[in-house]
Image 1 (cartoon, rainbow, N blue to C red):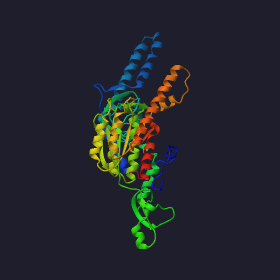
Image 2 (cartoon, rainbow, N blue to C red):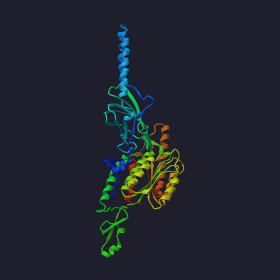
Image 3 (spheres, rainbow, N blue to C red):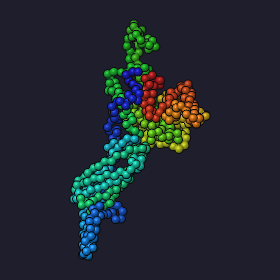
Length: 482
């Protein structure tokens, strides 16, 4: 393989030190905006007793012990309770009004699937008293399974910040609601309730860290762009680069006979790997992609793989388009290049969701044939239905083969492979294992049929999907199969 690109296995990729796949400005554009709001009173009576009120009232009950011998201690107990309520009223009046507090929700990084993130809440205290607050941010269960609750102390005319963690389990738009506050003075006798209207919709992107594991490709691509004026990549491509004197081992088909006739000695052509080719990433969003593996759907893994290969292809100089479809075309990004185009693809991948019905594969193929006239690489990530007939997705892929190079990627079932490799211990297990082996054998026959028709067909597990797709793309480039 040439020095332009190098395919490595999953172990090699994970050993690469992570690098940000896009520049800081691009990633910054994906970060949700900071929102702020003044606190408002919560409910009709937005106040309550602090914990120490009940402790002081409990102390007052101790006056009942000597009251058995002297009834005047009963009056003393009531006087004590009245004093406690008076202290509570004074403390409540001294507490800042809700409108003297401003709450800010800020984000330090994009919100990505299965990637821990830490949004922060900042409280600006416009009063002249120190307050102790307990805040609860109303986040959806897809971001955090338990309430996001933090405690914070803010000095007068100052601000303080605290963070909480989230771990998104679903892509797409998610709505965060209000922030609820309970705050007290240092005496902890009275308490006020308030809420800050910080309703905000955030977009959960695919796993952006997944692409970091492919940093070796991206870093190499950037080095290639910097050194383009000094060196050219000589590989197995068919894009003409330069001429040089024939050397032993050069192919005879690469000899330039016109230059040989002029110079009186053999001259051979040098080629470089083609750039500016077109890559389309096609995602099946039908019901079969709803299957969950290790907490994520197959479509989630497909989206992560699509983002990884899109970044590698764009940084390698290719034009990349994306099409996600169900019963209709759900998301479509025309083929283009550039960092802004990568951000557009990232946003559209975040919105791709599974459907409950079977996808219309023929519709997707027809749209691709209409939109892409010139030969390109179609990376089609899907799943095969277990049916006696040829799956419709394969029939759709067949319609593309005469014009395009199709990389047909099927996400396999790891439990099916494990079951087929077991030894049966009874008749029931024998039938189960035999059925699993038959399913796997039929899938292999279907993929072999795809290869016979000229497609690049393969099956891989969800955990290796990104690595497999990226390596397959690089092999296509290195071998000049386009």
